[in-house]
Amino acid sequence: MPEIYNANPTIFATSKTSKLALAASKSLWPDDSNDTLDNENDEEEPIDADEIFEHIRSINDPEHPLTLEQLAVVSAKQIYMNGNNVLVEFTPTVPHCGQSSLIGLSIRVRLMRTLPQRFKVDIRVKPGSHTDGPSLNKQLNDKERVAAALENPALLGVVEECLK
Image 1 (cartoon, rainbow, N blue to C red):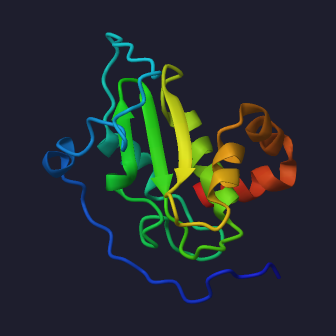
Image 2: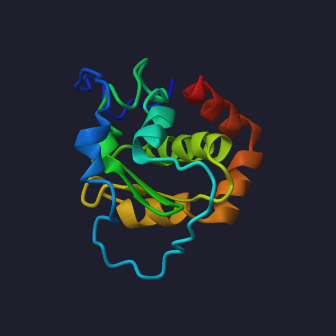
C-alpha cells in the first residue's frame, strides 16, 4: 500500500464560480512583471479563468476519493491569464506531499486535452506551500520530463484514474 501523506485532510465545500467576482482578479499575472509573455490576440473564442477552473476542479486526488477542489488544492483564485498564457497554482494539502508531482501532471494533462494548442500553460505549486517547490515547478514545466512521464504506462494509468 502506498504511503499516505495526509491521512485526514480537511474537506472544503465546492461552490459555483462567480465570473463577476473573478473578473477583477484574473486579468494579470500574480507579479504583473512578466514582460516576456506572448500577448497574441487570436480571433479565436476566448477562454477565461473560470472555464479553466471548470476543467480542473473535478480532478481526483491520488490519495483520497475527493476532488482537488474539495481539498482546496485548486481554486479559481489560483488561475491567472494573460492572453494565451495560463498559470495554474495549486496548493498541496501538506508541505511534504509526495503526490504533488502527480497532481501537477494530472492538471497539465487535463489542460493539454481540453485547451486549444494556442495556450501556453504553466503549472506551479503555490510559493511556500511545498518543501520542494522550485524543483517541482521545474519538473512540471519541462516538456521533456512531462513527455517521458506520459510514456510510462504505470504513471499514465494513475493519471487517468485521477482524471476520471
